[in-house]
Length: 509
Ligand code: NAP
Image 1 (cartoon, rainbow, N blue to C red):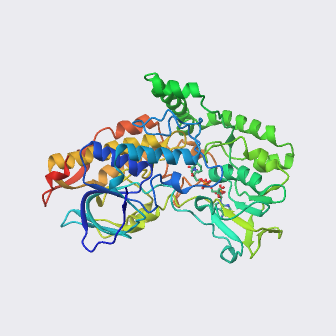
Image 2: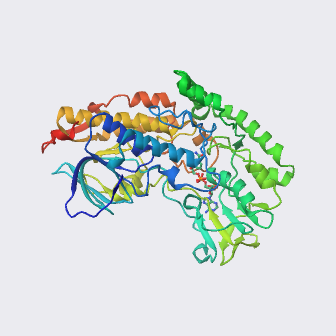
Image 3: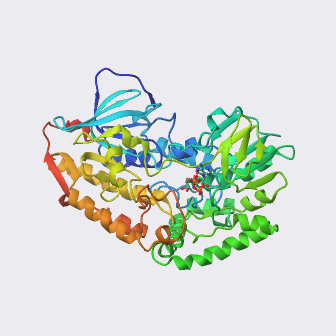
């Protein structure tokens, strides 16, 4: 059974403190264990493994990357029910992977990081959590790029008298049948939940969808796997790996259009326009849902259900800007007041200012949030930060993708982190951090590569960009290039210090 958190007066000494039990933290735990680095604890603020796939339970939540690829390379699953798996199935997959790997006894749930400080004399991170103190040689943060809901700053929203919740904190206790519901936002989450909501509220209810910017939405090429396919995946050696490789190659083939030749994305725009035309005949609505920027500048969404839902009798798409929210209505700038019972905010997450950064204080006594606040997020190879020894950030700056599976990136980073941990043990190192020069050169190269990308040139404002206008979120290249960069731990790019205290040999299996 997983451990329950318990406050402890003395810090618990561990070699590695993994933060977060989503895909990233779980992969780190499994690979540390395989490497014989057995002295680790995973703390998770939620009550179970799965991260975003445990927390996001809104109706219609599914993955928009095919699950053959949206899964670990070391834990293929022949039982995926369909091409794009639903949330519950992905969460159950993470749970099963954790059980099979026998790592759950190292997980401490319902425990959040309050404060982490680098203690140079001990060469450890002193970490306070809601469940006690840890003193850890390394922190491997898998805290998630999309974990902290961003609530919109709208006049009067705090005074709304009805039920209000974020898409990532769905309130299943609210009976939505027959209700008047407003949804703010039309991103990846809204595009999945609105079609379900439209059915749930039924003909007695109503949904107002508040759109600030339309998205490009391609059809979802969805189908269920047959029993025969599943049996073949299970029994025919190499078949599922070949299916996975085919999905990888197909998605990877799209990367150059995003990173170097954005004009090619006009092909996607044509597909999207057809998707609109198939479901919507009202020219006014067609105009409202058709974006005016290059496809790919914002994440391209996939759905067969979004446009039919918007065209339904019990749904209105509102594009006038929201002026305020009253006790029982949303009021738009044109003065129109639309009464509602429930307000769903599907307004995304804090991505370029990750909240965990406020809780981590580095070698020079400054928080990661302070350092990143000055010039934007930056990390060497998206993983390690100058001034923050022995801190590894999974899904760090410029590691996210617009075209493929994040699990591929996570596995690349985990491999690098495990290599670093092994090198530290082998060489007797107590502290490593990338040199300022190495980090600056990496960041400059990434930003140079960002210039021709659709995220820079596509003519939109997206959450990929920070307050300085820099894209500090996405990886501007092929995923295999990223993996190659991280294929070995490059100690020459690091300032290193010898161990000042011995490491317990029994920590190694
Ligand atoms: P999002 O993409 O950031 O979308 C937020 C939406 O809220 C946008 O339409 C945004 O409009 C709107 N918005 C934000 N603040 C607003 C305000 N003050 N007033 C009016 N509208 C406002 O968030 P998300 O839909 O939760 O998706 C976030 C990311 O999660 C996705 O890009 C994707 O990476 C991931 N995700 C993945 C899946 C999956 O299937 N794998 C599913 C869901 C989410 P603007 O466009 O004008 O900013």
